Image (cartoon, rainbow, N blue to C red; front, side):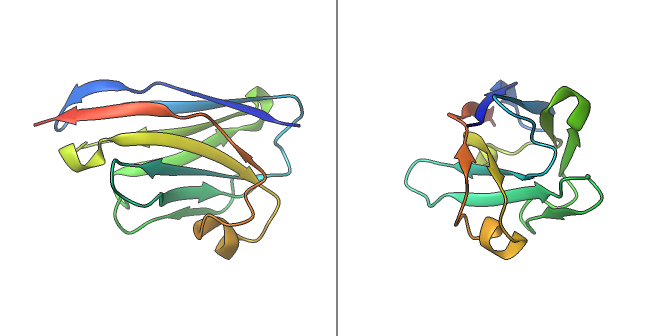
Length: 125
């Protein structure tokens, strides 16, 4: 079992930056794809970014490309999401996820092995 705990969310003004962290425990995440998703009220869960086990390959959704960057530190069993130039429409609960499956399934939010509980990000205008 893997437990994922997100942190780093909060209330910020538009244009600000935040760095979310996702700390894993229970087992190493070295051989998992890791990803970030978000859920806003009344909207479907949205894929944001994913990173391969080595960190050598990253995938970012078009909606956040150029503003959000995913990274990982396997020595710390932690994944990060750097978010810059935040907009009010970025307001959501942000979840990290771990998966053994192929990237196309992960991007679709399918066959995710573990989910975190989420951290709230609120961006005021």
